[in-house]
Image (cartoon, rainbow, N blue to C red; front, top):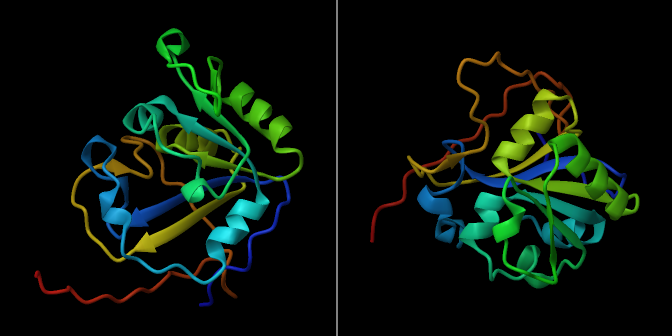
Length: 187
């Protein structure tokens, strides 16, 4: 298996996360400090900065980090949307547009704002809804070598049917991805 091809701006809807090996995209209460100390493929962040036209996230994530700079450490500048059931109590901010509509309308707004570039979905809940509606083009995951054991899962759908995926970065789209890690001794 090879790494993914460089990302291109093709108007795709990407559900994009760094994820722990056990399937969490954030720790309890949206904790994110676990994400430090990992190495990404050279140029990966720049690819996403260049190809992303808009970001659609959820209110829980925004509320956990209302003062956070824009995505990718501030390197990315563009339209950010937060879908919420309660926009009236959202703090005013220049960089975020709060949306109160259904998820398909929110995606349409984000796609229009993206101007032909990709829309990144930064919410497990919104991503799950769009996936179940058939509106996710790709799931971009960066699996970090860490086990969190608790937190916010990428995909949580109790009682739902399995959703089969095709591997984009290999010769066999139905191949299992094999990873092998060793535990690191505690300091």
